[in-house]
Length: 311
Image (cartoon, rainbow, N blue to C red):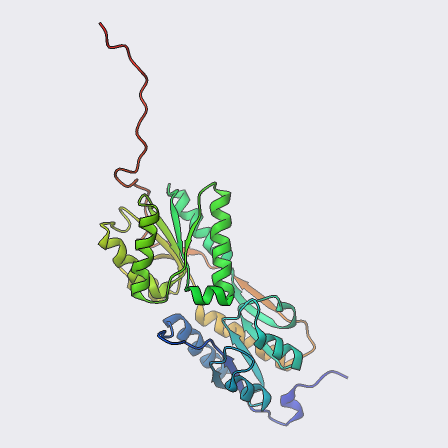
């Protein structure tokens, strides 16, 4: 006999989905990207006749997570910004609670997920800059807190950048950066202090993007004449900065829609193998990248053969 979903066993179920998202933390605000995912999941859930219950649960011990799952307030859970080692996922898997993830980790086998190929996208950004003649390419990642917490996109982006730089026989220089304007300026300060001849960078920290631009301007680097910037970013962020950012766009609305559809399939067919969807959007060329122009004073001194000047 086929397994029945909880909604079927209890009549109508709760007709509510849960969304676990990371807490903003002290001194942090939610980024436009994170809010886009929350809004996208809510909108997609509505089209299926479901409400959405939000929980900023960071661990499986957070009260909001325990109430959501322990009290069975929802029919299924969507986990957003999953960590590589995520005790919330472990708890959901142990209890057999229906869930899907936006992102993936080592327990990807037990649930459906939708994710971006962050490693491939970061590598593609490096290759784009290399094709334009850039050899000194820095990487501006997300915050130290997110990276050390094991969030997949931060780790995968770093790996893709580093592997591609090494493949091209270039020296990787990656920087962690807070999700705000001031941190973007500080990241540029560190980059140019470490290597003043740097001519380009890849970033997947859109919240710090305006600060990166300001930092470059403060150091007399014009984008894209003197310095090229390419990133992994949501369309609105990429288009609001000046010049608009050449970027691999994060389709937050599409990923949210897919996550909800995977959740619906999980509820309808709990015994079916979990589906996995990996997206790799193309890089949209805008105005923030150009041919490499070496920084004045950074070129090696030309070598001339010795001539006998005695006539």
